[in-house]
Image 1 (spheres, rainbow, N blue to C red):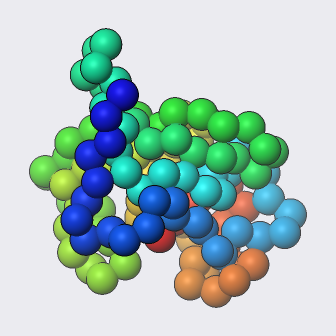
Image 2 (tube, one colour; image 1 turned 90 degrees about the horizontal axis):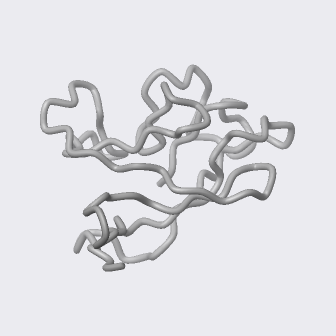
Length: 115
């Protein structure tokens, strides 16, 4: 397994500090910043820790046409990472999260924004 770090990221993990105290088990709380490439099938993924303490892979797919997929500086992201336990949630963006994701303990109970 190889790591493909983004040179703009200085830390190996990203955390959603807006996660509320009473959140659902399928919500992502922590994940690797680096995209991991599995040489057996060339799949790309990040490793995630969920609110219930379980861990799992989140597939990362190229999405050059990802309209509305932005990072915290407003730049378009060329990929998406959709939570398999919450398929409509791209954990890399606050898109459609519907809660004040920029305040500690005030985020969405289901949808994550890792930064």
